[in-house]
Image (cartoon, rainbow, N blue to C red):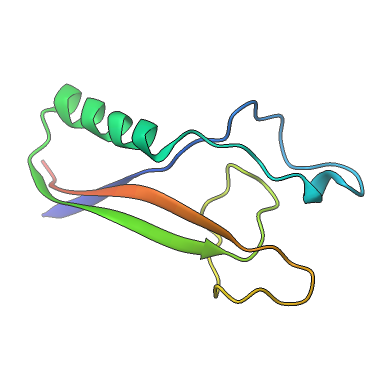
Length: 97
């Protein structure tokens, strides 16, 4: 059986979802993609994972209300005043035990 695990750059200095009128205009700062790769490498080594495939995934986020929520994906079209963010992360496909 195969499975996958995603390694997403985590938000820095995370204090929760934006608050107030101008809170949503602030662009959250994230770890680098290289840090996500390092986390994937550490997990693979620590768990002795049998890797099948590694891939870089890039998904558009039309808006991010909460920097920890990477599950919301939509079209990459910027409509009106919305700002588009792109989420790049590492996906590891592996043989499940």
